[in-house]
Image (tube, rainbow, N blue to C red; front, side):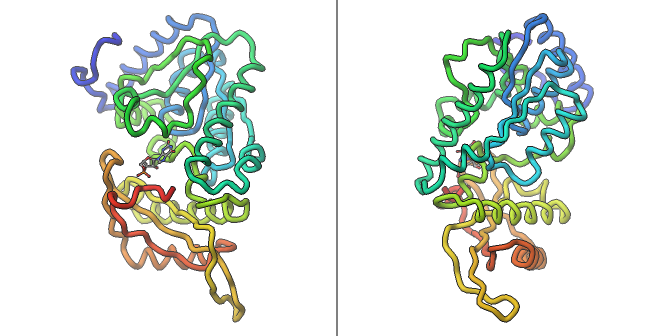
Length: 326
Ligand code: XMP
């Protein structure tokens, strides 16, 4: 596929057959570009980097080195899934770095959202840099850049991307899905046999749960957030909302309210449910969630998650509320 072809004029990838053809074409192109050299990829477990990883494993196998940095702000089960799918099932050359303590130590006491983002972004680059400098003979850097990233590279999303890597990494880029839209990346991911939960994952900000554990992050509140979020996701999946709602998650503020449990005073944090629909994340509407389900989620979170004693729902569209709280 020539670089000067604009996606607007390309035939879109909408079926498994078209995805197979795209994969065959890219496998050949990557082999041609890379030869017998090694390629490095920061594998977050998000849709784009996962699809690039699977594609490159197919093309060049162990010549691809994937680095997964767990910043300790992943959702429940996500790093485990990366290890399971790429490390075990696809037998990738995977380096797993659990950098949780480094990130959480740096974030301790930091309340300002943009400062939190900067710390997470800078530390991510540092960890990735450290890992890549331990490797020898890497000539290429693979990235899960997709077409909207190129279109928006000077726009609103630019400051968001924690995965942005240092410019002085002198490696040639391998970007096999750079002319695709998100929906197409998903069709390709399906054709590559990646799990549905990975391919149809809702968007997750680079700083992860770091901007949902509001204010200064503490390990106990982060744990409560992760558990509550997992319950929300599980219930949305069980009740057919996962494919209907664009983004849904829990945020946990850093204050407590009074409650009662087992006849005793029980102070805890509130869990805030946010469930929005949008096309481009620039504006968002509130999805109506059946009350019976909200009751069930409230019951489960308040009973199963240590430290949470209330569940509330954020009904604010964007504008005026941004999707994330921070
Ligand atoms: P907001 O909160 O600005 O979010 O309405 C719009 C979309 O962007 C995501 N978001 C981020 N993504 N790094 C990211 O990669 C970030 O720092 C970040 N902040 C917000 C948000 O989840 C929503 O999908």
